[in-house]
Length: 178
Picture (cartoon, rainbow, N blue to C red):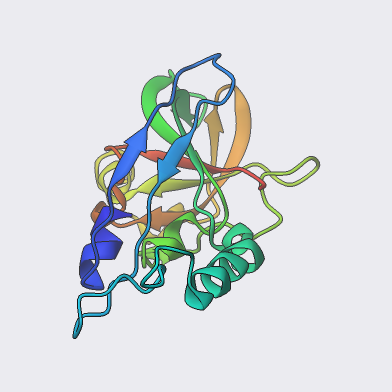
């Protein structure tokens, strides 16, 4: 998110408090909109009350944020190919818009559809460029190949570029229906 903000001449600051098993554990984001020419905070009137733009912004967030949300949950997974011994790899379980919010395109294949990750949907996985090169010798035929993730069959649908290593270096992405 910070990288995306900086690309658009903005700043992004987070106060994260992800504490496992704690109710209310979440991320809190503060946002302001400053007029570059005057330096005025567009979300506040001269008397400190919320501006019309602030209420429009909140309404826009309420309407559009669910579609743009890029939730993710870090973890690890056992990964195996062709019935081989599983390796423990870092994984992110992500919402369907995760890659598009970061402005990324797959090197090959595709990223997740909005319906993937829910009950009854096929088990699919996106692999990193690093894993594609090291484990699959950069073979273009990897798309559609069946692998095992946590002892369940999955189909490789895409390859994420090295620039997808946000918020950490991972080799697998699995979908999460939001």
